[in-house]
Length: 299
Image 1: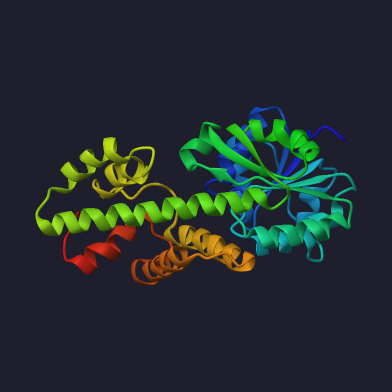
Image 2 (image 1 turned 90 degrees about the horizontal axis):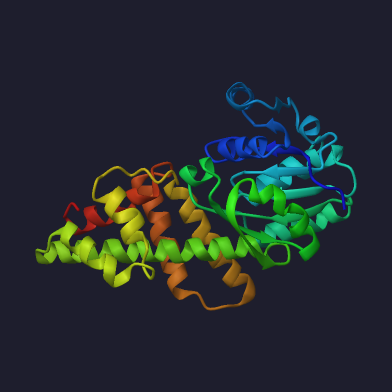
């Protein structure tokens, strides 16, 4: 298989920008495309590389396409719609999708691309913008052993660890499940703290006490509650609606498999309700406002 050197990177927003920049630092030939041309132009002005005006242009002569986009429907659209990136890709090239997408949709896109001679790896990331900037993202990968091995030098330029989860779609499933666990844990922590506050306990004392009790089992206490919620910074860089979407993916996947997911269904309802009441674009940690309003306390 051809060694990947020339990459078309689609989606250079908050996460995609530093990820594509690290590919440039890693010696890859990068052409970027974004739905907002000014965003692609700003990337080139800041980091170098080239900007493409169309999806076909970003894919032309590329060994691989890397996408960092909101969901699988958009990935399918930019790849397979008329004038999409797949129209300009040669047989034997690969799509590396690094967003958080529905694994069922990912498999459908992979099947459609396979008919065109284009392979696909799903490679979602764990970690926010800070980790994207210093190339310490944890990356999951789904695809054949050979294809993941071929893509590994690309992934290593952006992350510190790559975990092969299985065939295409498996990494997106794993990412959704990991974020589902995180989403459950964050709600659990907030609920306990608001109950304790109502009883009369100090919020900081509770959070500090819970670190040795729960760290490693309930990491939002140390990573989100103390540095972001109790300080009211709300600065993790992940929108509340994105977490709500990830939980829905996990629940939808369980439904598709006929698996029981009663807690997931309730957690999904709660995150969706918070999107409506607190706001879709606010930081995920601002979900605390949902509990503060209901309980009548302020952490």
